[in-house]
Image (cartoon, rainbow, N blue to C red; front, side):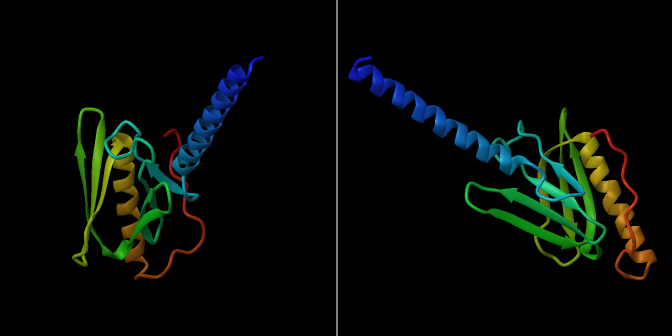
Length: 150
């Protein structure tokens, strides 16, 4: 092998390594960030190509999680402060708007599957009902699992 061919192979190997590392970072940041009911936006929707926004719904709060190259952005709304959930359904994907009673900015989630959007709304309504029936007490025991098949 000549010096020029060796240089070409080393350059190709370096480019493949850099591409593999970047692909691994994008894949890892796209995984669910927490256990439980995490809904990820489609990578086909605007603003979600590399790092899709995720929404975690727990019995006590709604968390919007957006990974970035360095760090993340997280916003949490307590279940008692969710005032409404709006779903704007398009041809394929849906946008979800979760508004607060405290006057702060709502959580806007673009590009969720229609079924995920309706499950998000149903979970929030169920957890709010449970919260207010218990008089605002924290949930006790495990939460019944939701149907799988997402």
